[in-house]
Length: 116
Length: 113
Image 1 (cartoon, rainbow over the protein chains, first blue to last red):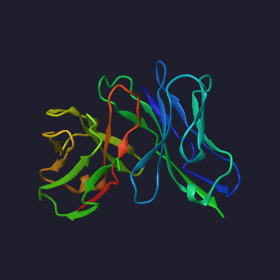
Image 2 (tube, each protein chain N blue to C red):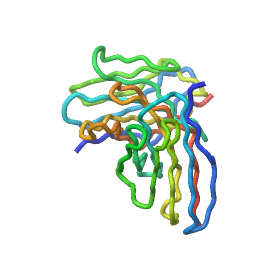
Image 3 (cartoon, helix red, strand yellow):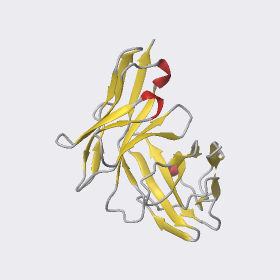
Image 4 (cartoon, rainbow over the protein chains, first blue to last red):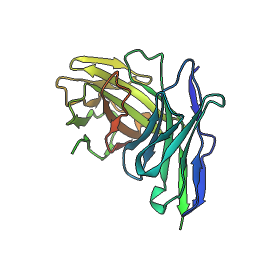
């Protein structure tokens, strides 16, 4: 069965420090992987995606993610965290069994708190 | 500005009283979808639509209906809401087959008492 796991419910980091939000996946075939961010009282916003190519993907707001096929991981990273990065982060993988339905399989989210 | 607009943002209603949550997008996207978000369960797809007059069930369609009479609008209808439909609902749109990310609406927090 396809699945996405975000092993940490919450991540705390000091402003200016690097941050990592972890994601592992289980899919057959080549995965399409996504990161979204949800700010309080807002909808989810697309950050970045991996489809193919370079394992290091750069996205919005200075975020990047590293695809590691051997470890089936797609961790989200940022070199220097900002207080404004505090939000809920979701990892997702495209459901390849969904046919034309562009359904994503979502992780449960990781709450990132950046402390001043 | 490219966006997905949902209304209302907040709604409290009583069991059995029919309601509609509207969703409209201005990007001419063919694909639209509804999700509900619940603590510990994450995002689950309710219905999706590939284009006008083409809709299909997602993972949790029971108790919901949708329609797609125009490309821009994709309303979610609860004919007889029940307390277990208390949730945060999101509408999303995207272009199929291009691996693009979704554009989400800001959400509708529904409480059924």
